[in-house]
Image (cartoon, rainbow, N blue to C red; front, top):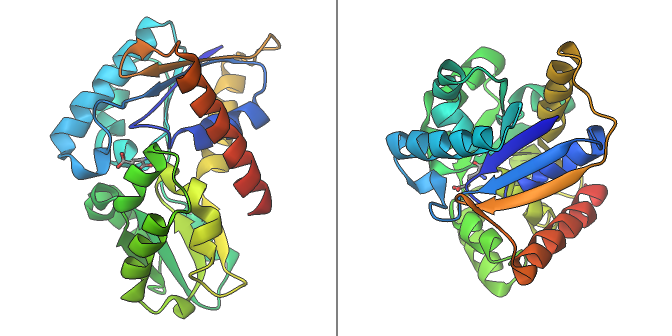
Length: 260
Ligand code: DGL
């Protein structure tokens, strides 16, 4: 199967990494919309247009399913994409439901982009699931720019997080939900702002499990040879330095996620 994934940038690698673990024999086409990153600071209409362009491009490559590897694009555009295209379109959303079951003692903090935090999709999800009103949300748009530069722990990142977390009492939380796929890269530093037993969770596993179920239903799981092609806003990435950058990021995810 050809699986297309898109994100505003490198965040969706979190899902690509998980897909390679659960579905190791597929042909992956990963689209980073580097011309328009960060999505979280664009309007919903713009995000819909960018998402449409990305999905259209991936379908042009012959993809049989599209994974919206971005919480922001899912919240703004997944409905439109499902209406417009015939292939399965799988989205990711902040893992509020599993987080509520993970720990019952303290509160839950969802960190995401301003669009995800503002949009109806997350508000509806919280309203539906969070009966005891334990969930809070915080937008951390500044992390996306750092992530795009491969900067996950510099003094600049720390200064930004000191400022953002300085305004809240982080000891009230026992679960942190990564509601933006870029944030997985920051797990080490994020952990340091919370009590030692903080649980960090995100929607990647459930999303890829859903993809696997959809492919199984269609009888489409491959047993071929895995391949990955990268694109940046419609241009295939061939530059060795850039490919090495993606490779470094995949290795970085392995390191941080295995710990988490
Ligand atoms: N990685 C994206 C997400 O999951 C969006 C980051 C951005 O471009 O603002 O929400």
